[in-house]
Length: 251
Image 1 (spheres, rainbow, N blue to C red):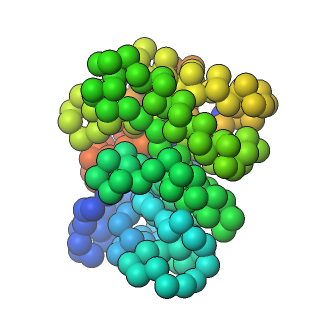
Image 2: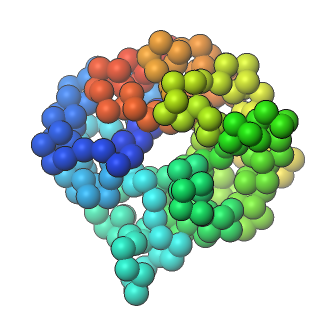
């Protein structure tokens, strides 16, 4: 049975003071032991959050990593090796904001995915379509293409050590949410695509839904057979709301 996972993406938010307050509040939340919980602060606050959550059951991840592991001349980037050295165990790759606003290609995302795995970090591979693509009936085509590129580069066995998050771009930060049925359709297609390579790996990989997940809609979304948790944005900046979402995943 797949263990539920709830991940909180803090994006470009927080000061040292507000991050300390949020970290302390999260550490006091009553979180179900059956649910794995990870938060993704900005790179500026990684060390602070790793220290603040030390001893808690909440893991810490980075929002991105460089295409190359190790060390070298890549100004402004953080490698997976550097992230691991800070105490990070997870990393987001291919978030739609980076794909759309910063021009990251499927090939770039694949390189980051491999770099993370090579440093024993767990990559959370983000996939998703824009509103225009959904309205033109391209949702499954887009998601399958994004996934296929990583499978081709990393191999299906890599998904034994990774997580996939489906995020419809039109539902991120807009207040709009895919219906549980819409989300399940895409999650099932992702699992089917992975199953065509290796059914055992496909059955074990955890698939998260991201896109305006709230305490009010979490239980219904997480009740779908192929949705194993959520990648939470704005609600993860409020400890009580995030705790409620984690508890919904545990139910």
